Length: 242
Image 1 (cartoon, rainbow, N blue to C red):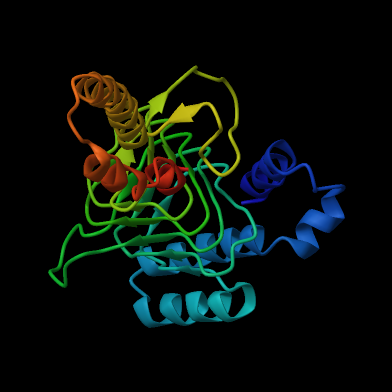
Image 2 (cartoon, rainbow, N blue to C red):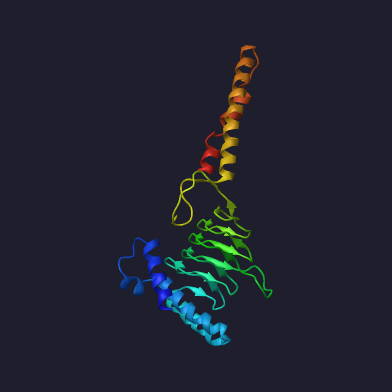
């Protein structure tokens, strides 16, 4: 128990630059408190003292703002940063060195008994407000962006973001811990596709303009066509994408 607590404290220093000393971590980090109390409630749960385990987890939720079902399986060096509003369901499984932020839900999509909550591999980072729902698997070292809603498996090492979540294209791979799961060097494939369409539309506009000029030289009136084109703001779609 004490060895695990020491590991948890070390993981706080490794992943939170705001942590200054051990006393501060022990007294002011609700994620650490929730983890310690979950270890206790989980052992009681496995001893088949279900009500007592649930009651202890209820006290932990009141004390920390973090709700972890005593039946959830959690690995080593698990770190919850800030923590308020975190919900982890009964059949959730979490690997080693996982980090999640406030407002995260590891929830279910069915009332059926059995496995109904997600499994997170080792080294996963889940950004603030993300929802991972159902008996899906998040691969090792995957990252879930803030406020993402994930309902499908995420491959190892991938980054998922959006509603519903989609896999982002990493412009360049970066080693080490990535706070809040998503960095500026990751591209959204949907955004890239839209920008590609915008570029194509600009080329088409240029060609249409050349055609109109040639028609004017031939004496054809194109005032109506130009008036229609002027009503459209060419920067409108760019504003939406940006």
